[in-house]
Image (cartoon, rainbow, N blue to C red; front, side):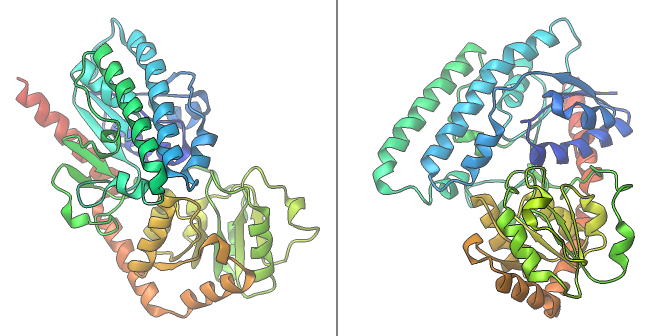
Length: 411
C-alpha cells in the first residue's frame, strides 16, 4: 500500500475529476489524504479518503469573475497574487500537520495548487500533476492566450507586475530551499507523470504533447442523488438539457429567453438554474414541457438527452461527449471560448456568443443540430474515443505504474 497527499483549489470544476481518481486509488488498496476546505469534506470522505481541513484565503468568486474578464493583465496578476498568498498561508500549516508522520509516497496536485508542487520538492517525493482542462506546451501556450486581449499600452505595466510576482515567488522558493522558477511556469510546468482529463483528440495541438502527458480523458464520479428528480418524464419525448455550470449561472434573462424559445415545443426541457436564481424570477407559470430545478442529476439527465446547451466548462463538456450528446456552447470565459471553438472545429455542436443569444438563435441552433447527421456522427465517434482513453482506470493504472517504477529505481 502506498500513501498519497492530494492538493487542489476549493473550486468544484477542479475538485470533481480528482475525486474519481482518489476513489479509484482507494479501491485499489491505496491510502489518500486530501487537504481542502470544509465545504468539500463530505464528497472527499465519500471516496474513502482522509480529509484534512484548512481555511483558504482564495476568493473563488473573485477568481471566477476574473476568469470571465476581458482585462487579461488584471486577471493574470490578481490570480497570481491570490495563489502566492494561498501558498504562503498553506505551506507551514501542512508541513506542521506532517511533522513526525510517515513520509508520503507521492503527491497529487492540480495545476493551480502551487503548494502541492512545492511540497513535493520540499519532501523529495514523486509528484503527479492533474490537468482538469487543457494542457500547454510550446505549440499551445497559456500566456499567449491570456494576453491576446492586452492593449499595447498595458504591456509595460503588465511586465512590471509580472516581475513583481516573480520576485515574490523567488523569495518563497528560497525560504523553502526549492529551485526558483517563473510565475508563468505555473501554467507550463510538466511532471514526469501529467494526467490530462480529456482525450488527445480534443486537446489543441494534441499530437505535439510528449510521453509525459497522459491523456486519460474525463474521470467522472456521480455527484448528486437522483431520487427526487422525475427522470421518468425524460422517456416520453426528446430531451433538451440546459445548464450553465456552477460559476456563471446567475443569468435570469438567459433562462427567460430559453422559456420563450422552447415553450410548447416537442422538446422535454430540463433546465438547471443554480442556487442564486429564484423560480419566481422566471414568471408565474412554467411551460408544461419544462422541468426547472436549482440542481439536477447531470449524468442521469445527459444519459437521456439529445442536445445540451452549456457554458462550455470542461467537466460538463466532457460529460456530455461521454454520453454522445452534442452541445450548443455559450461561453462566458476565454477558456470556454476555446472549448466552443473546438466543439465547432470537431463538428460536435455549435457555438453562440452571449450577445447573440435570442429565442430565435437558440431555436435555430437546436434545429440545426437535430437535423445535421454529421454532428451526430462526430459526437458518437468522440464518445468512442473517450471510452477508449480509459478515464479513471487509466489514471489510476498510470499512477500506480509510475510510483512502482520510481520505488524500484530508488532501491
